[in-house]
Length: 115
Image (cartoon, rainbow, N blue to C red; front, top):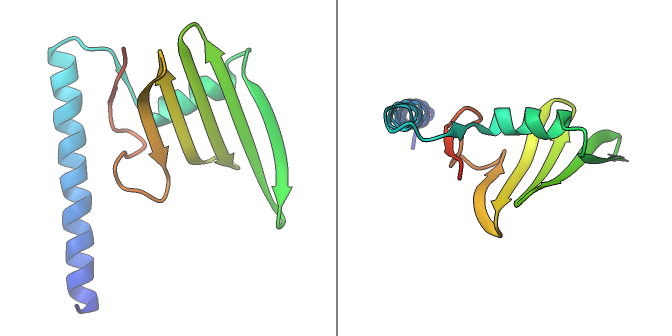
């Protein structure tokens, strides 16, 4: 593949992900289904008073690891400064969200159905 075709492929994939996000958000709004996004969950976890935080420096890079358990929810978040590296959310031991910054499955603002 040429560099030009890789750019076109990446642009098409990015556009398709935006379309899917908009469709999900619209459907959740129409059905009145509570939803949130990875970014909103990360903000919630970081600012919740019951969140446990561990900070480490590895190879000169600072990381923060957050853990929060509320009622039947369990959240785990890893960040590097303001970048979200990983976010996992479980409800009643069932996976709600599994975000990894190196994957394209969830975007930071993709609506996620909340139980």
